[in-house]
Image (cartoon, rainbow, N blue to C red; front, side):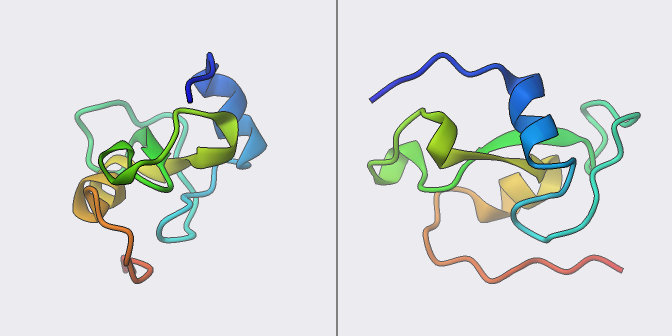
Amino acid sequence: KYERIIVAYIYERDAWCCGVCGKRVDKALAYPHRMSASLDHIVPLAQGGTHTKANVQLAHWICNVMKSDSLDVQPLLFG
């Protein structure tokens, strides 16, 4: 399943809060900064997840990388 996703809408929907670690994401940070915003698939595509609004969330880039394609993720905590 696939939907057209407007990334800015997802970031606003999620109130600029990382869905993995729960901390704020700074709008001013840009990739490749490790704490910049990225789009995370809650259930990874590699695990059968869909590219839909219901299955994506805002995540820090580093949180997204550390989560990888895992389904069993403990919240990541950064200082």
